[in-house]
Image (cartoon, rainbow, N blue to C red; front, top):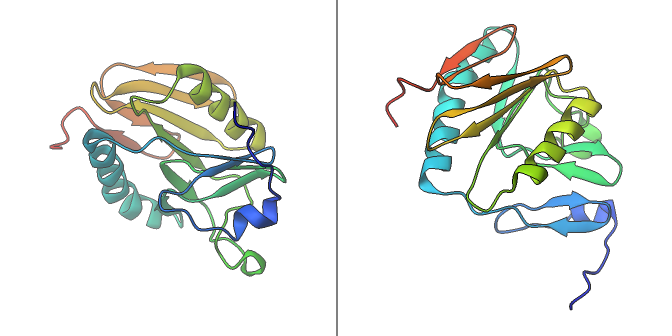
Length: 169
């Protein structure tokens, strides 16, 4: 069995990947390659959330590195932040809790891995986390105080909602 070489956070932050990887406790963790449906939902969310968020002073970005702890960097599929990253990190990484993180399921994702990310985001101070199944357009809305099952395609926060049920994807 191969043993993964541990790297420092700084080594990770200064490394480029063809498909960006996450950083978990010294390990570089590859993310599953997205399917067509995953990418289509991701693109739709960017198209809808970006103009909605701008009216509120938010920024919506895809696959942005979010440093949750010194040795933990996650990359949500879609991220809505209240301010741009500060200059010392070159604007390359978010270090304050986003308003919303979205995880879109890929066939290679496991439920336990996804729920671990949700717990990490909420513990970091993220207000809302959406977990979306791109095939059924169902999922969950997580907040610090509740989890809501979405079976009608409507994902929401306290400030906006996105209806995936009628979206032409």
